[in-house]
Length: 185
Image (cartoon, rainbow, N blue to C red; front, side):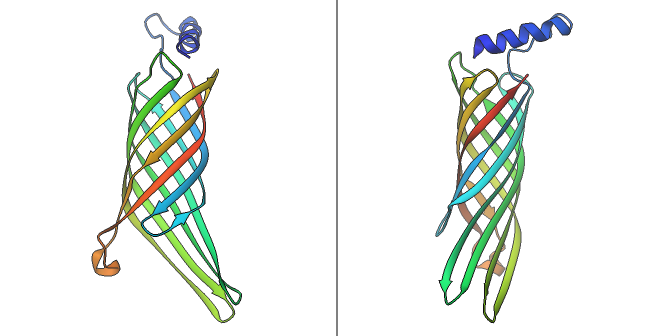
């Protein structure tokens, strides 16, 4: 991929002033599947999308949005569903090697919005909450072709809650993401 990035940089140099050749991707966009595990529940299906703007070879800024859900049949035509939406932004540190794996680490700050509902005959209840979150994580982008890669990422997400309302100062969550990444010069 170094050769591909260098070739892209050489092509960019033809249309840019001398000395402004890029040896790293300026933009990266990822999307794919997200599994979310909390302290006592797993959300088996979710989607995640992120975009990064790289300032140089090592540092960039990333923004992420994600959604995860779980539903359960409680019997007698009563169903419950839980949804979690997250949005955050923060710095990303890249380790762009000469090989195909590009590891990275990032720290996101944002909010998590959770919504739960129970529906059935004579039952119609829903509740939602929005809380501050802090989400450090690590991942690797394996370059699979010209301008794209396969990405895997594991995060620790701390969702801060009001202890007077919930009895806890926060909730620990562990999102796992796998998907594709477009690498844009």
